Image (cartoon, rainbow over all chains, first blue to last red; front, side, top):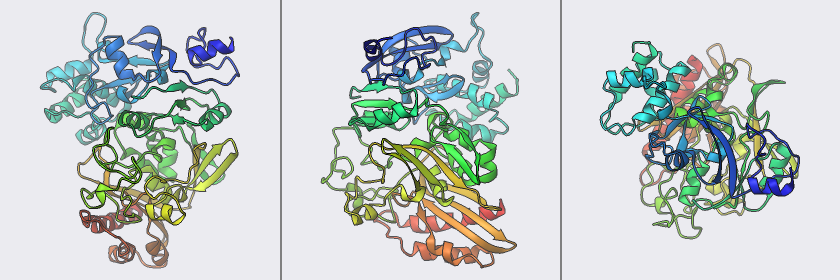
Length: 187
Length: 335
């Protein structure tokens, strides 16, 4: 590993599959573009991206995974929610560079390979938990995490822990019902 | 977003050296920094990602202190049993902040360095109005216009902004220390001394609008230590315009030690009323030795609120802050 290699690739060793293991004790120089390796919906990607690209824009513009929606682009609406290493996060508030070595799940990755819907997706359909549907991908991923976290012991708890996902059609009662139904395995 | 270069140091020594370079800014969670970059609040040349520095997300007990690494997220702190047992007020403050998604990324190091939610400050460039924080010397439109969510303590004509953090208020009431590191070494400060109200910045000869903390550019927060107070009970109360996922109109963090029905010691900090957590020192001095009652507490808290200087649109905050403090104290004792 030479100094110029490190300078040119933003500090990620090309032979390091996880991308986050230190292989060199030289100081790292900040770079305008970085090498990033990450999994999206199970598929591995190794890309060279501008340091300022957000996970949201990269998913939508480069991978064409447009199920992840761009609402406020400032962390206020939750439409861009994805799972990163199993935890829900606003993809508009993360740089792709920060996701090096991560596993990302978007709405496109929830259903089974045969197209069989995830129980939370089915619950949203069964409960009429959307109208225009723009917030739905973020709602669904947030709900998947909310259930995994165990924050579904009451409607009040669901509303509190789902408050990071706004629905301007105001389908909140149906969304709460869908989350509770999926959590109780009633799908 | 202005172009910048990115580096992810592998250890603290690398991080400290890179952060000290002129034009460098730290990113950890990034939930605040990315919005600053979009709005043009800051234009760093280099962004140094400290988010994966080893051993900086730890939460534990050590020699009579609860210790928190700067990279612990708000959800990790809020749901940690040790925090719930020894610093309930801090856990509550963390979980009442932001949303579940934001709390999965936002760190306790970065949270206290978020900046005001003043709508004049948070506008995108080119700024359509004056703001002494964004363009020094242009003025403060909030001083005589939309200021219903602004300060009632510590402000000057230069700036009337408040600090929006919830965990910071709890840390201040807990008498926590913040640990800092720079190329010159480590130092430790009381959390309550980290931020400056506008009047305080002015009093030490700094720009009241832009000098918001005593941090130097090359310094980085590495963690906090919270002294364990035997038998202390605590509570955090947050008043918002909607029930969840909103910044506060007023908050209060209370830490109380009781001896039977008598208040033994009490520490109370108000949030979202000044550019730093506002400790109610008169109440803290006068209440110990008194029997606990809501009337006694209200009277003591009122002495502190008598010092408030409300703006044209936020006189309501004086009474709201008083009642929030009283309720937080009573909730702490009842916990």
